[in-house]
Amino acid sequence: MSGYKDPDFQDRRALAQKARAKALEKLADAPKLDEATIAKRKAAQEAREAAIAEKSAAKRAAIAQAKADKQAAAKAKAETDAVPAPTEAELKAARDAKYAARKKRKKG
Image 1 (cartoon, rainbow, N blue to C red):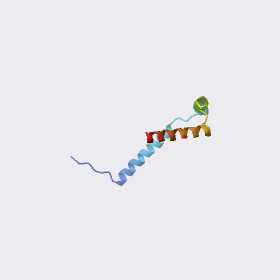
Image 2 (image 1 turned 180 degrees about the vertical axis):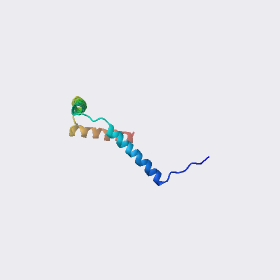
Image 3 (image 1 turned 120 degrees about the vertical axis):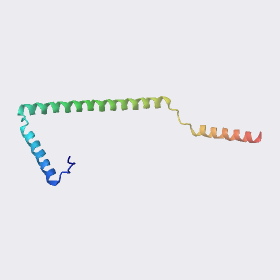
Image 4 (image 1 turned 30 degrees about the vertical axis):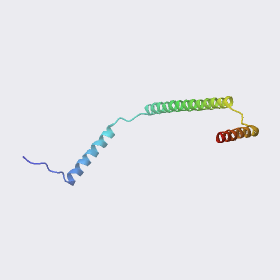
């Protein structure tokens, strides 16, 4: 019984050359596409790309609309919840009340 023999460089080169020739032969034997088939495939590809672009545009429009609605809702909420800024007199009265309360706690 003979053992396994590693193929040398020449053997590997011959095998690769045979495989390359076989692949080229298979490629050459493949049927050639006619113009009608090519045109049909191109039209189908363009239709797919158009559908994808339309879907993408619709999604972007929906996102933009949702963002606009959210901003409008936030603006409306801010307008309804807006508390007028206190005037100088109101601020001074609040400071004085705090000061008086602090004085009262220290004394009593």
